[in-house]
Length: 294
Image (cartoon, rainbow, N blue to C red; front, top):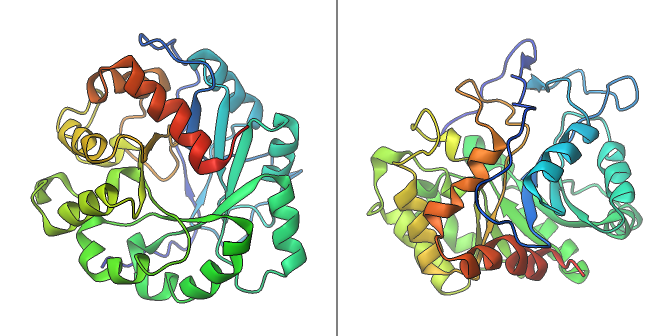
């Protein structure tokens, strides 16, 4: 497994395309973006001195405008370690009046009261990132799973599907739901027949996990509509149409390639899921079931 780079200075992130275009597909009422990161001005929400990157100068208002243009009413905020605490996400959750949920960071030292505060604010899961260093990242996995189980939270994983044959025995024993980020984030050259991807499909069929249809720009296809990613997305949807959700990955931090327009990203569903009823399931019904929206 890869080892995360350790930059001496934070890497600056590109700006997202703020000129969001309206999607060509019809977006159903109650649609949800299940994967976005929010950042606030560091004067109000300080950044950590030790961080991998510096986010672009975008605010919650920019994200809300993007959602409004797309016609998306709900969102799931995946908190990052850039900020020193959870305040930027808690404030966004409060302002959303129940339309946002959030995902926390692994922290075995968090008290029960702190967990309850996050739950009351709208947090519904914890994200692990074994994509770079699984051995270190997953050390507290079972402990955290046991602590969040009473809250009904799930565990989310940014991983490479090629590593699933090694990781799946631990994931399948967890007492909580499992969510896999970014279509399994496996190199396209590995192919759909790779044992790891086939295991991901099996886990979906057996209702052992959920998968986010997010971040197609992070594969080798340079620009939308990412035709080489299409078979991956279609295979995941076919395996379990009631266990996949869509995410924008806004504002696309730690990405050096062509920044896509988020309208183009949403319109990928026209090819991945041509049936409007299936798109409603992906955009509305599945997020309701996974994140507990009213």
